[in-house]
Image (cartoon, one colour):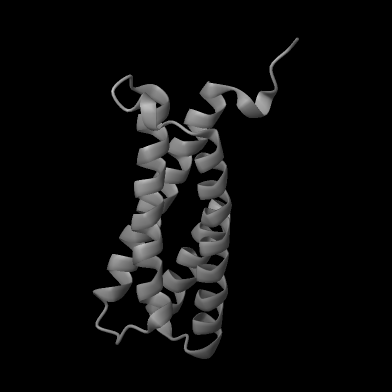
Length: 124
């Protein structure tokens, strides 16, 4: 019996690393936006805890999957639930961010907001 490509450990690890890189890019861009001197709204601040949550979840999944010390906490059911929750949170962040971009969009902050929105869309 052949294993499914969805369950291939190398593919899952690569996917987690790409998602981790994209989350870090979103956090860096949000930091750049917040340092522009513009008063932040809920949509800008909402991305920070969602990004940190994603980093923690990806760290849990990578550590429990690839280290013997943390393998006792490995749970396919928990990973499935966490991955489903990730999609919901990032979708909520994208919707709130899109409403913020469409409401107030001026100058360089508009460009940074649109880039953050596009990177968050690629995380989905």
